[in-house]
Length: 252
Image (cartoon, rainbow, N blue to C red; front, side, top):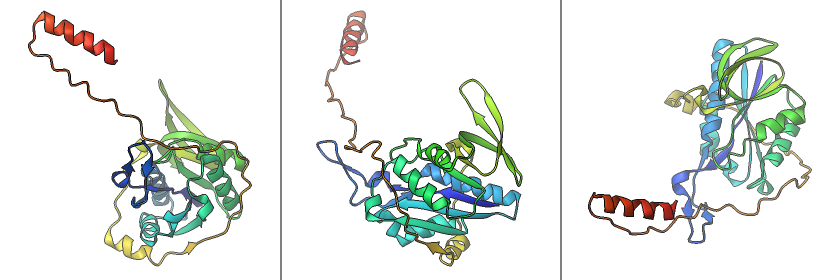
């Protein structure tokens, strides 16, 4: 079985600087694997433990972050056998429909049985890439997968937790699944895995894209913070409580 796993690189949260106008400065932010994609990689590794006849290929699309050797090694240390890094300056800050198109074009050039994505990404969390990818590939696609039950050559059985019930789904292969954050706890690679990652193959294909301009990213800003009212009410009598409620209603 050939498994492909989507791995997006996102900026480290603590390195992002919020400017006075609300815009985000990420120039000094180190790249990391999106937390939700770590769940996807771990799911692929769990499948490989069930069946030794499994190969895992990580696929990543992006700009300057994908030039970082350390982060590519981090991807490979977590279980994939190889990495396909699709990097171009024009792919900086691309949107889900563009990422899905690039991945679909790349997938069509590879043999595969199952593509695993995270439910969303650690930056935009648009929850669109996996669904769009499945549509472009014209294969069964399921999001919100919360448990892996079994894997066979021609089908995969999973659970999906909904608001009021849990579905058990048998999905014929090839297929695309998007896993939720509660499907597993991503493992931390040991020294042996980190050293072995440096010997695994990395390919950098050039993948063309016909951008349909479905949407355009205008700007990304941090939410505005409300100024503190600096109202201090002393005492716990009825009058003070009434005053507190009055102020509270003004700010809600």
